[in-house]
Image 1 (cartoon, rainbow, N blue to C red):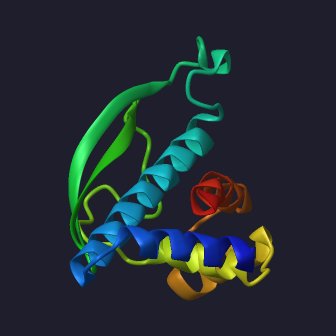
Image 2: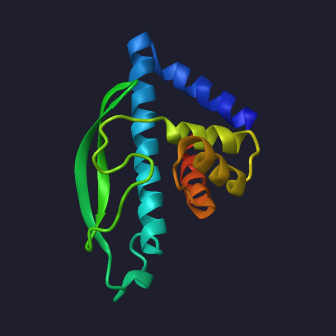
Image 3: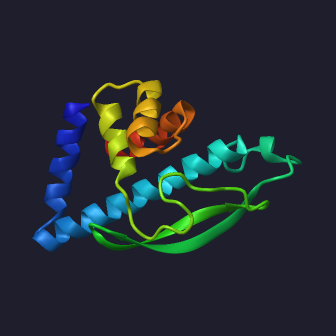
Length: 151
C-alpha cells in the first residue's frame, strides 16, 4: 500500500506546477471520492449495484441525482447526491441538508489504512462521532475508493 501511495503522489506531483495546481488536484480527488462514497451508500441502501437486474420490481430504485454545493477546506465543491424513487435515501457521510464537509470519509479511510477492521471502524464512528455506519457500509466505501487511490 505504501508503494502505491508513493507512486500516486509522484504522479500527481508531475502534473502540478504551482500550489494552485496541487490545491485543484486535491479538490478534484476529494470530489471524486465523495461521489464514490455516495454511490456506495445508495448501493447499500437499495441492496443492489447500479444497472443490476436485482433491482427490477423491488419497489424502490435509483431516481437520478440532486446537485449540491458543499463548502469544504478545498473550497466549494459541486457533488451529485443520488436519489431513490421512494425518497428514503439519506446519505450518511454528508446528510441531506448539510452544506459542509465533516471529514468523516477521511476518518474512515485513515482508520482502514491503519489496519482497523470494518467492525472496529463502525464502533469507533458510533462512539466518537455519533454516526451510524455499518461495517458493510465501511467495506463498500473502501472497496469503491481504494481502486481510485491505486490509479
